[in-house]
Structure formats: C-alpha cells, structure tokens
Amino acid sequence: MELTFISSPPGEGSDDEALDAYSLAVTTVAERLSPSVANLRVSRRVRGGRILDGGGSGVVITPDGFTLTSAHVVARTEGKGQASFVDGRELGFEVVGSDPLSDLAVLRVDARDLVPAELGDAERLRVGQLVVAIGNPHGFTGSVTAGVVSALGRSLPTRSGANVRVVDNVIQTDAALNPGNSGGALADGRGRVVGINTAVAGVGLGLAVPINAATRRIVGALMAEGRFRRAYLGIAGGPRPLPPRLARELGRKSGVEIAQVVEGGPADRAGLRAEDLIVELEGTPIEGMDDLQRVVVSEVIGRAVRAKVVRGGRERELELVPAELEG
Image (cartoon, rainbow, N blue to C red; front, side, top):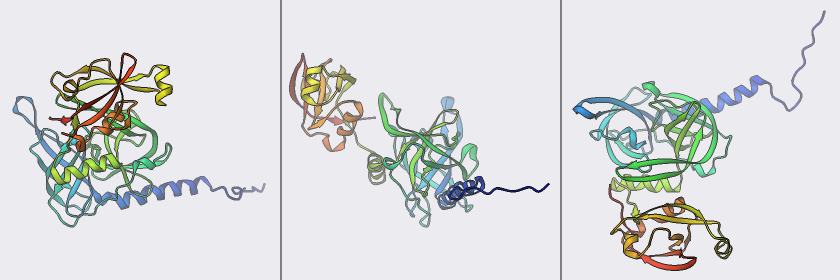
C-alpha cells in the first residue's frame, strides 16, 4: 500500500514554521535584551534588627550605569547593592532615587560601558500582542518567558506612608512572572522595553508599570533630582455620575466627588467642601481620579489654579494653590 503525504495548502505555513517564527521572535528579543537586564541583590533591615537578603531585577537605560527597577525592590535597604550581568560581571550600585507611588526607582551601577535597553511606548500596545519578560526569578539570572498582552488599562494601587495613589494604564500579561522578576523588562516583539514588571496578580497574570510619557517624566526626575515632586490638594474622593442636565451641558458623564477635605490643606483653604463635585481643573475636564492625577503635577505646586465645581446643582469657580506632597 502506497502512502501519499499531503503538504500544506499554498499560503499556509506548517505548525513547525509557525513555531519557528514564534521562537525566532522570542530568541531575538532575548539575545538583544538579556545583556541589559541585571540581577540585583540587596540587604534590608526588618523587625528585630535582623538583616535579610533579597533581590530583583533591573534594566540598564544608559551606558554609564543608570538602571531602572521597581521601587519595592530597593525599599528599606541601605541604598546600595550588587548587580550581576549575563557576561559574568558583578558590579556595585547605589540608589539614585525612588518613587514608591509609581513603583519605580533609578539606580547607578558602577560602570561606564553597559549595554542600554531601548525604551518603547506602552501606549502603542494592543491586547494579544507578543511580549517577552526577562528577569531573575528566584535568582535564576537571565530567565526568559513569553506571552501576550492579556489586558490594558489596569490600575495598580501604591502606597507611600499615608499617601495612596493609583498607577494608571498598567499592562497585564500572561508571561510567567515570579518573585525576582520585579524590576525586570517587559519587551515587545522588537526588543523595546514597554514595561517594568512589578507584581504577580495571580496564576498566569502578571502586571507591569508601563513605559509612557508619564513614567518617562518620573524617570527623568529621579535621574536628575533623585525624587519626583507631586502636587497635593488635600482631598479624598472618587468618580460620581453627573446629573443629566449638567452632563448634557458639560458634554461628559461624570466628575470627582469630594468625600473628605483635609483640614488646613489647599482645598480647605480654597473653600472646597465635602460633596462638591469637581468637573474641571485648570481648564482640563475631570471625569475620574486618573484625570485629576494627570493635572496635579509638579508644575502647579505653589501656583494658583482654577477649579470648577458643582455645589447644590450650581457651578462655582474657585481658586486653589496646590502644595507639594510630602512623604
């Protein structure tokens, strides 16, 4: 009996060809990016005065040693540690600046000939797009996992002392992340870093802080000044739907309702009250807390800004002077 082998129809690649194309994309990213990802080792003091060793990952962004990582990787440390690379080098580093409210930190590795990664733009990502995570889970240097962008626009609550903030547009991926991946690179199919891996949200779910215009501004400030300044209004609140008439007049569906005003804070001094509905700040429409966070930046600290609020069904315009967020 003679067997006849049927080839794939024209235009359709075989499973092997598809696998090879996928493998080629992942291996190309790994080869390009692995030299730029460091295995970080730090020591932190815990309760009782004990010293515990910990670690994470970092991404080199300049040849002269500036390296990006997660703020929680270097939190409560002595501000220094060791970084090892796939070429076998072990180098010391110091923490230049840390911003827990974005979970980003910048280090300076003691070298001037490192291989920097190329930073991409997370705003261009699409759900289903291939991404590659490179880091050091459980201390295994240069580990590579791949997956897809499983969701965009997630929110990540962060805290610094009594201050709580939400990191917007967090990337969700099914690329496997484990302890030690924090601070490592999440790259697109061309090897451009589009996120910094920050958390494991569950089995098969990892989160990464996006590389976009907002985080680039934070990284730049940390490199130049060692900190990122944020403005402070002294309110707590959340989104609330606008009354139908106001929604039609303003052309939007919601605003931010003030739940609490901190006594003596900028909002209190300006005359804002609980249950006021903020619909505009400095000419920018406000529909949610993320809109408010984008407007309340370092440039408005100490400068009078106009706030349009709804109180008792009527619009009012107030002037307030944001202070600098401490802690």
